[in-house]
Length: 271
Image (cartoon, rainbow, N blue to C red; front, side, top):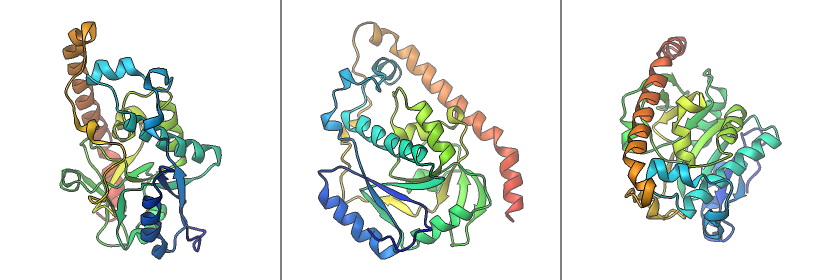
């Protein structure tokens, strides 16, 4: 770990204790940037007993999504929650969170400094390299000094928590919503109508998921087929329809509600 720049926002790299190879890869990636970073020990989902876990809301999860979260997904969300708790307990104003299967752009450090000083009241900035995010319709809010990065608000929901920057307010609010969990951490980050957080994306993204590193969460999270029986199976079509309706309505209303302040901020920043 290189601690040359003590003024740089804390960077927490979530990493399983057993994944020494990924620590070495991330160190090789971040050391040349001359920024401080800390490996934050992840919760190993394989060791969790979901039946006995008070932090997991199994009934709600199954009723609205048709199947359980995987052990890896629960381990992931508990790992991110631990970072948020660390921020609150240590009164850290803002921080960068990375998972250990990412790559970062050569100008990553400059971009983070730009965000820390940006004239925008952001709470969360998500680094999402997905094509649907990068090409989504949205509102440009502020051009960063480091070109060609643009801070934008998009109306779509998107998964991915492999890289983001957040402030202390966001850490506190995420903790409030993560006392009992039915959705992965990246889904919660997209629920802006629930959190009320000023959430933006950066286009292009200075962080991307490394295709050469398979996620330790596992691929079962991509299986969306219902696995229910009894009364849960009977009511699932209704609860699922209600979820989709509330999600679509929530994100649309949140996007519309932000229109006036986004325009004001964009004009102030010369856009």
